[in-house]
Image (cartoon, rainbow, N blue to C red; front, side, top):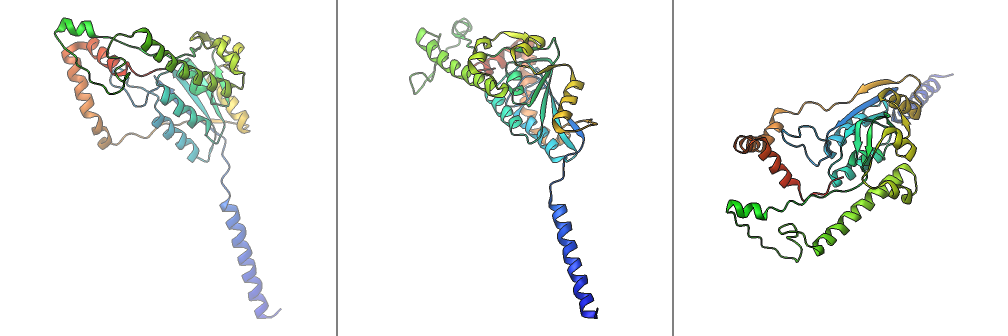
Length: 302
């Protein structure tokens, strides 16, 4: 073989080797044997509450945690440890969508409580594990209306409300039969959305879900009989189930937590925190609770 042939052969092997390496490294890396553990504790809300509600499950928080899990090629599945009484309808729906679209297996491990919105976000997982004594269920909607007209009169406060739209100020006066009917239709629609989500997530007939969607709470063992829960057990059971779904023989649990918030971002919450401190000092804890109830009274909750 002459010199030209040797050079051609070497170049050919170099090109072929480069193509093989390119194909190998271009393939997405397979997930490893780790099971990501994400703890979701507190009421479900659009944003974090004040000192009376320091822990909240928000869409932003869940999104960041799931992104951390997805970006880690060593994590093959995720276990969501849910301990929540429920909360905001819109936030619950957004979190449910995030869980539903997660590309790897998701298993929910219900802790002490996963009711209402806590159950709602759980049904989007591939498998639900609960303890026998876990409190779950409460498929329903609640909307509080606090009419303060008589209190204002006693305090010498006159509230004048200007509106454009017949029912824009529906909460500014006492609820009459007409207003109650309007709000009931509104709540019934949200209730039906809840029922449909549970039916689709649990793959059961909507009529069957409607029978138990009375707002009633159930134990974990009752929920399993009703089809709301797949199996009974704790976090270890959930990890084993996640490993089975991901095809992992020897799972290694890894806790997924958010990185510390930079101090310059924490400064953004100072005005609200100062206002809360002032309210607490002037009115006491009961006054602060009343203020937060008034701020949230127009928001329907699961």
